Image (cartoon, rainbow, N blue to C red; front, top):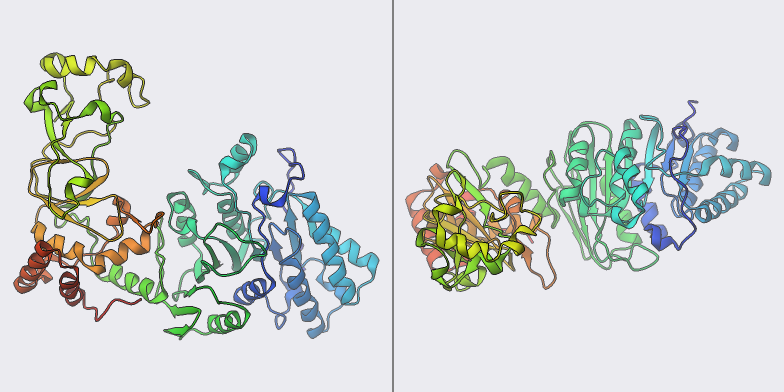
Length: 556
């Protein structure tokens, strides 16, 4: 039996004081959820678990450890082993001494109930459960067979600066405003042997948000996504949490078949969990549905740094199919581009209604979200004072009227973070030469559904508007495609839904939309899309789009 240990490194930081568990992101998992995760991971008593090593990286008070050791003991009995044979089968850590003590007590109780002496049970519990920071002292690489648990939910900025800095140095995937659970995924994955399995219940934000990009890239580089089970609204924890939890099961091997994707809703419980666990062991299951869940097995999964979609299994399966068959909206073949309007950093200075503040050549008619609310551009009379020309910032001495106006506001403009020596009069974003005169589609930043509006080359977009231009598409035809529920499906799958039910329309989500190839759009379809776009008829646009995509209907 190969002994597996945590890496032997001295603690780089003092251990934290014993605050409440919630202050360290500790949320304890219900027993039936733990049993489901163990089943999905394949940590079952019919296997010789004494020959395998399982790691619980944030054991808390033993919610996972207790059923794991119960299964381990049953496995030992099934395979005719002595309890002493399981000595190297468990590796557990926690940052808080109170949790370590509670877990050790629970472990002792399980082992003595299985027939081990109190003395031996105490020694084994002490060896298994140690006070360590998993992010700073992870297991040796490729040394364990299972990493299972519920890592803490806490943002990096909520821990001390010294510990946050240490975490970032130790965890290459932990970028931006990451949650510390990203590091648990990283070190857990790296510690797995070939065919080893990680199974976590955790907040699902890393699957879509920018701070999860490095982790998603790591997963796609050598790990297969086996199960994704979203549990929003499911009573999975001992206390109510403000999170969107999901169970993910990842295996150290290349992706061969697609994962089982499950969407659970309130009402999902132990009985439904056993049904899902049984499905995970089969490869066919194209579709399954019950009152509290939907399930499907996909043909493949999404690779690279880009976000993973969310939605029902059928919706995710359709998105995977469309992404495999069609080009993205932003495409070099059709010279189609997606961008965002100008952020000035000082709208009170750069956005004006008085045309006397600058020369006419330095004023651009500015489009705001309210200007397109009716589905056409109804310009509100606001201008952008434009300090840019084709080759960069203008020389102020060439534009005395604008120079006098901006100099009157120089203290405010120079105090901005974006201002630099000699460049105090710049806007945050550079104004794109010629964009105002181009025909383009506008899409507002926040909306309950996708809402493309045609600008015929009369305005420049404000930063709350996204724009689409194309060198080959008729913008009305493209607008009809973007008006459809097919395009909206992509936004719903990738976007973050804000308070009030509004979707966030950002360039990164718009670029994920797939569009039929231009050559596949016959004239009748083009005419029908144009008519639907001009009439703002989403249903008609959807009917044409479905035919072009070769889809009978959109799944719920």
